[in-house]
Amino acid sequence: MLTPDFGRMLDVMLTGHNPASVTLTQAPTLPEQLLELLDMAIHSGESVHNRLTRIEMPKIAYPEMGAAYREVPVSESGHADVVRLFFAPPEAVA
Image (cartoon, rainbow, N blue to C red):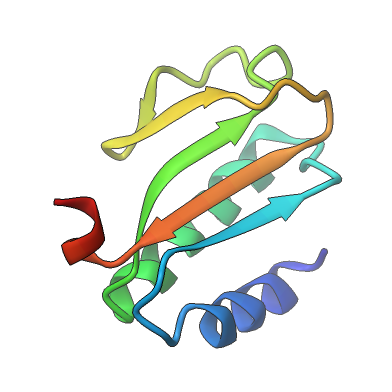
């Protein structure tokens, strides 16, 4: 998915104040692309008060990724090409 398309999709999907998730079935091939997508997800979520609360990714493909990215917990997705992003409004996280 092209980055502008991903951003537009997030903008539409996150307009409500309900928990939401996105599953990418083709993980970015370069770590820089992944970081760009994660930054876009964080920014999109914050702009509509439906913040990114969890990231699941194939950690073997991104060995430099720690247990969190910008304070968002990161865990193993269990699939080589799958990245999952979970969003929730602040009242759902408390």
